[in-house]
Image (cartoon, rainbow, N blue to C red):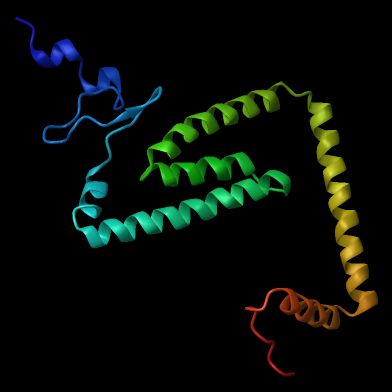
Length: 176
């Protein structure tokens, strides 16, 4: 006689995403092709009380959005942009199904980027690193020259006054 567990397979055989849900927990909703993994006990505990559920959702949303925004900014500035986006989406995926779907796409893009980097000629990779390094040295040198030539503190104060004229809610600088 075959037991029910052997027919479905144990969690070790099928993996945690395909294992049957724990008793007392409803089957997670699926949307599209992504199957949501059941959320853990900590998530259930944080959402047991409406106040902690709201605080958790707000906290996860703020932190995840900031990390996601930093990843998007790092796409055009030096830094691991795709990694930042994936981490931000992973944080948001703890609360939102749409973020879990986007996280799957981000993971695919990370795998594609890794494959392209591994296939790149080492000489071309070194050449790109040298070019980026040279550009950074030139930009830093220009910044130092500008600060020495045009007296940085005065420029910063004038720039703050200009920003205040555009955005009225910026605070005044202390008198010096």
